[in-house]
Amino acid sequence: MPLCLRNPHSVAAVLETRPADVIEIRISGQAGNDAWSAVIETAKRQRVPVIGRGQIPVNRRGGDQGRRSATVEAIVKPRSDAALESLFADEDARGVWLALDHIQDVHNMGAVIRSAAFWGVKGIVLTKDQSAPLNDAVYDVASGGMEYVPICVVNNLVRGINAAKKSDVWVLGTSEHADHDISQVDRNRRWLVIVGNEEKGIRRLTRENCDELCRLTSRGKVTSLNVSVAAGSLLAILNQ
Image 1 (cartoon, rainbow, N blue to C red):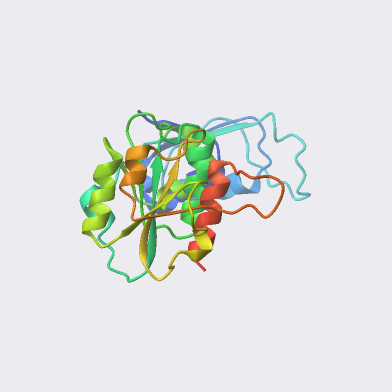
Image 2 (image 1 turned 90 degrees about the vertical axis):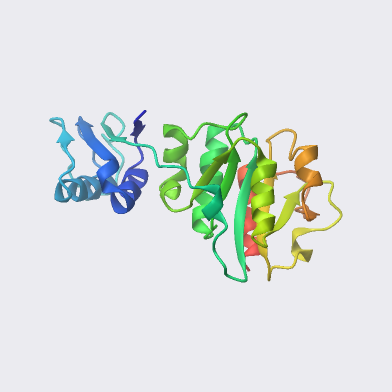
């Protein structure tokens, strides 16, 4: 089923990576948004249908007045899933992959994927069941990140873990109860980092299949992080 995207950065990324999958762009009202102006210009160059009577004037003052009443949306085909067999094919001595163990909030899912794209994650594994669907909201929150990180959806996360191990990728689970801080992890390795459910963390079976466990240690009075913030922090440290 096609997606309806309303973030111009998400649409720009699709136009860059797979323009044939943009079915059409619909405009309604006055949209004083330079980002959408650039998207419309690119779409027209690539002969993507642009439908509607609305205009995309350039707002030279940079203000938001009048923007909220406008509607601009792109109808886009979903991206195809990556094959598990090829997800870990990269042979670099160092690199990071990400596994999501039942992340269920679409905004968390999108934010994690955006961070993964920012930090150059080589691939993401997530489960088909009990995970947030890769829907319009995820694409828009990811702000283009969906187009730049291969994503493989599996029935069983352990299958993804085993595929990583066969490709000489170490598996790093995350838990607030782990003995070691992320700063103690050897960054000169190939890692599949696993982050868990918003409330329960990684599951027992997942934890038992990890090579190592680590935690993010609080330096202040707040002792926990939202899963998307935690994932971004882990990726930042591992990429140092």
